[in-house]
Image (cartoon, rainbow, N blue to C red; front, side):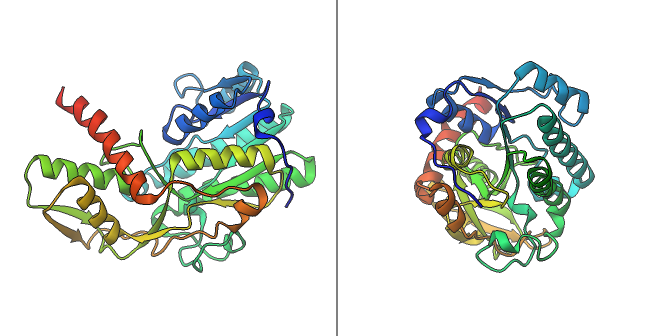
Length: 325
């Protein structure tokens, strides 16, 4: 593992940066920060113009954008329900995107490739906190294993392309993200936006209860999306090495406590009923975040409850108004 210390205010000067998934949730914050750092040119490919599952579309993307750096955020992903329904789709699409994009970027002589993996790549029963050294010590949790393994192949590829070709590719593992601009579609959203929407709609409709999946016992760690974006750019600026690096907050909370916190913050006073016929997902998630701090100085800055309040405020101001209009 190596650190290359660079002045963050200078690194992006004149850089042509392609951000796949740049119009998505996390991508929007990465793009905002790239603009603030005055990157030379930022290219955001749209799926309607470039189907990154297809090799020729990737070649077109590289020819059109001519990037110095690619930050690969694009993914086919969803919550537990979506993962169960689309396991084959998520495996194939994420695998093909990652493998071909890294390979074609190497052939194009790219200066740096930043691959964004997933916490779903960790074994189901990883020791807590999750250390990057335990990444291969078991099979991932079954509901999202195909997605997690497909994204994990970018780590293998990143390492062997560095070893054989000296291609500068790094691999980051963000924990579960949350923040404004998230996806609040109950069919495809992750746990925090889904619970916020359920609570606010139940409050508005004066319902006496809401349903939550599982039994509430699993734990999760969450990272504010704006913090995650900062961590990704710090790694791009300062880290040039083969080892995977976790991006997290180091804060663990049970789904039951999360549900009760969101109910309190949204003002929902009804009963929370748990549908134990639904899967819990991975039993615990908490990251060892030492490596990110040591290698490129990243530490999460946003207090969890304050972050939740900002998400609730954003959803109230945006999504509910849209739905009512």
